[in-house]
Image (cartoon, rainbow, N blue to C red; front, top):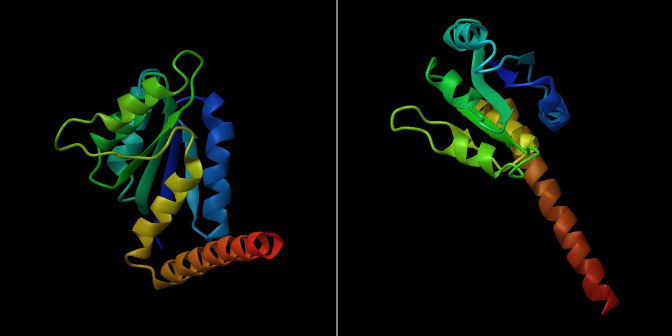
Length: 162
């Protein structure tokens, strides 16, 4: 099975990204994480992206706040799917990172999740890998059924009370 690469622009992004770590572990997906900045360590970020496919990665997740150029810089150096997590920052509440992540030029796509949306980033990575991994597809379908059952249980409880 292919691995997921996770890059954070700063160590301060780790609390957000922990949810991606947890989700990938739940699905049994191997991952590797690094702190590489698009601005402070551009060569390391570029090298990781350029060699990711040959190193067995199938999807890359990039988390960054404020200018949030990491996902775009990584996407420019690989043809693997890149998922951007815009992280909430101190000034514009994450809107700056969201717009930086989602506004990519034609030809360099980055799939973007919600501000601080690490769990959905990991789930999207699992869905991408599930295209060729039936075991992951089964796990995803079971999780969807469990979510459906939880909602229907809550509905039944509500209707039993009113």
